Image (cartoon, rainbow, N blue to C red; front, side):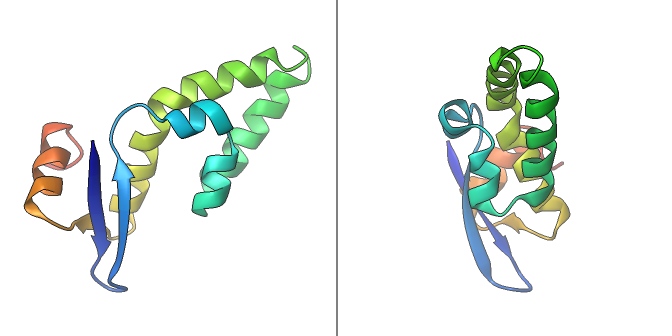
Length: 102
């Protein structure tokens, strides 16, 4: 399910997906890098290095799997905390039904 979030100050609209992140599953930490989500890029990079080096990469794969389930929620919460809001009624209903907003 994709929703639209808009920033009223900059009038920028971002389309984001709620739920499992297939892009993180396949591309890992490159997703936050491409989205410009620097905070989560460096967190994922650090965790991947810390867990990946001693396990010859298996720990890094595990990080990608775990973050596939939670990254979209983290990304949406960050956008909401930076002033973004639902761009339409459908997006607002979806955010309410998934407990992002009250």
